[in-house]
Length: 217
Ligand SMILES: NC(=O)c1ccc[n+]([C@@H]2O[C@H](COP(=O)([O-])OP(=O)(O)OC[C@H]3O[C@@H](n4cnc5c(N)ncnc54)[C@H](OP(=O)(O)O)[C@@H]3O)[C@@H](O)[C@H]2O)c1
Image 1: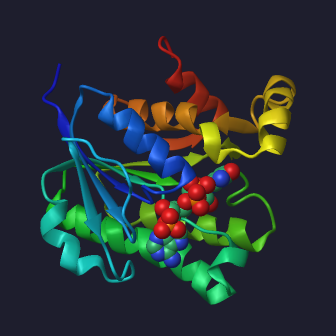
Image 2 (image 1 turned 90 degrees about the vertical axis):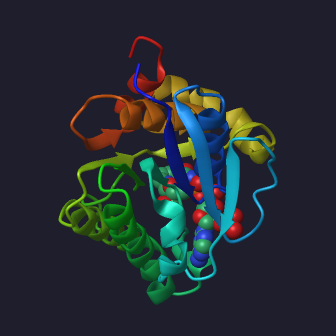
């Protein structure tokens, strides 16, 4: 087995990012988790380092924290409504991952970059899908050694993060249309297996992520 790696998680306080952090901390292939956040992550663990960033469009001040990284999970993201404007949505969805990828490419050239995009990117004629697709295209062209683009459908939050409606509806959705939704934990396992595995990189859809998440996947 190869040596345990240092991983970096952007968006570590969110539904997807917190699941990735939890899974990485339970994984002996991971030596250290560096969570890049704008507020305290609220989790203590000897292998977890919480690093605050004040400007994700210019994360240069973090550069020294991004050396020796084996895998980056970019789970930071927002919706058009939460961002407040189309311009702000574009900045979070496009500028932030590209800025992170630029620094990681320079500081950790051997790393694997795992980007959390969304189902529908490049396919649906919706503003979110167009910006996600643009981020995918630009990341694909920016010289990263190994890149996975994950395009999950709906992500079911873990435990208490899920509301009563989600808890009731998810099992039905999952049973009837398994390619549409995934739990945050399955997603995290799928992303980690992809990053730490041998495959070349590429697009990971919900079904691919579920397959990777199963022990013999
Ligand atoms: N949820 C889904 O069903 C779903 C489905 C497909 C794809 N996705 C994609 O997956 C990614 C993660 O989704 P999620 O559901 O985990 O989102 P989430 O729970 O809302 O978490 C988003 C994360 O990004 C951070 N963030 C948001 N805006 C930021 C900003 N302006 N500056 C710095 N940090 C910011 C949040 O930090 P704070 O905690 O500090 O706010 C949080 O850590 C997104 O790109 C989303 O498009 C989600």
